[in-house]
Image (cartoon, rainbow, N blue to C red):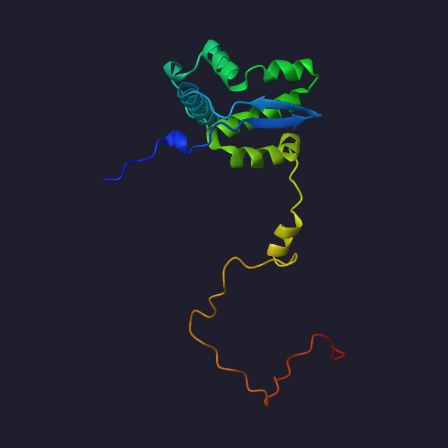
Length: 175
């Protein structure tokens, strides 16, 4: 019987999240407690349910005190330091949202989220990058599905030696 290795031997969860803003770095711990992680998942689920119009029972809600305690564990003193450093509300929102994504979905998702902050918070859509344009056939539209052709079967080839019959003219002058 194979014995599993201890998770702490190969799981690298100690690498902190460091987010630079205006020449300063704000650091978050690489891992949070299981209690905080589960509570964060619950809050995120409840927010999503409410935004989709689902009713949420009062007993499922998280109290303000519980939410603030969770935020202290997740963000530590970063929020207070950012305020003291003169950061804007948009910067604080971006940093704390990125840290939340980091704890819920991991470093790769947090990095992608961080890189989209400029346009996401402004409401503007980013211009496609060069690689994306090239993958789309250098600006030409590519059909999403292939044509199925005639549903009734194949059409025989036209006889190139026959000339098409002349039709009616559209004017009295013949042109």
